[in-house]
Image: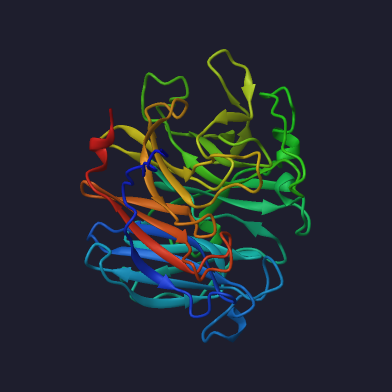
Length: 399
């Protein structure tokens, strides 16, 4: 007699649909970003890609990535995510919202770095401001760090034109700006030095990973999270908070490894990108990280004094493309040893994604905004909805 299938309990499989594509086969929903303001208002960002975007009303980006137009959207919620209303469309993508002083910003790119600002909690927005000309940038809605009256985040500059080897020639660029400055002014930002994967992390001795073959991509890194260390007992702790770590998706690597680098800010404001090191002093470029082979999100929670990791779980990397429909939650006190808190959500089939998620703390709960798909989605990569999931009393998952 066959044993019944045992369904794993999911932390937050139910969801609220924040956005639904008007044409799932031609308009795809990407890059969910989430911000919670001190007032409790939630601000969600997302972008739309695909051949049908050019037909949508509103401003669009015609330059950046792929042959199609792009469009960003901003939605706000004043009831902790139960209902949403759109307040803006913007002509760039790969964006994330962040708070600096009393202003909200959304930073992304349309090939060139582009930013907008709101001074009324997301109701109205400034005109887009470009920081660069004729450059190629990349990113996703990854983490932001606030320290010493500054906001720090990472965008990724492509050295050379877009191509299938772009992950090897992306440079994570750490950007720092004063909280109270007008951050739509490029002069108010400081940019770190640029170093590509092939310059800093390509040495096989820096863990020596056997890269997966046949995917069409060369080894590289992308979609960087910026992380500060707050524990004085940690070997990476810097009491001046001028040292940060970049945890990045390891492209074309085996599952559950992430790329890592260190950025050090000097008294004159310059920022240098170097190898991270282990307590022995040995340089490293890779580090164990559940789901590090796909885009992930790291959030530090000061109440639990833990880092929380939202990432895609891989169950069979030998059989084909990485899975995008299993969204897992882990926690760690040191960024090295991760404990699984549980599965957040799981699409009913591999083609119905739950991935590329962002998260914020809302009281005792964790709110998660996911790039997702229904049965109508074109593919796991090209989903048709942005879904909001709530993990209630998430700190009680620690064991």
